[in-house]
Structures are given as C-alpha cells and as structure tokens.
Length: 95
Image (tube, rainbow, N blue to C red):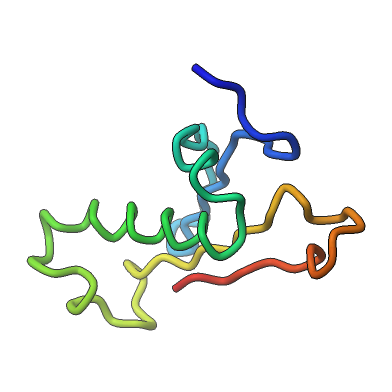
C-alpha cells in the first residue's frame, strides 16, 4: 500500500443527523490518490454513497428527494487547505 498524500488524515467523519450518531472510517487510499480533495474527492465520495443505495432504489441518482434524509451531504477540503496555495482556503459541498 502506498502512503496517503501529505495533508490527508486518512479518515472520514460520517454524521447521521436523523439519529444524532457519528462515526469515523478509513478514507479509501485509491480515492485519495486519484483526487486531491475538494470537488473531486467530494464527488467520488458522493457517487460511492449513492451507489450503496441501489438495493433500495433502482436509480438512486434520480429517486432520492434532494432534501430527504437519505440524500448525503458531503463537505470536502483539500490537503492544501490552510497553506499559501491560491484558493486553498475553501471547502466544497457535494449533494
């Protein structure tokens, strides 16, 4: 296994607002290598979570209510966040 890119903690925080529970799990190293962060990583995590819902919905991309409790909201930052890299002090919201 290759190490995660610098600035990456390797963990994902998942919060269920309906139950008030929170858990952490490991970030897929392959995704961390493919997507630097922000928009790309957030989109990859969103698609991954929506594909998990295929057992309940034939096409979760079309079936989910945009404001419903099943629809994930992903906030992602880049490993460059907080550095002097231009526009790095941002996060990206995917939903």
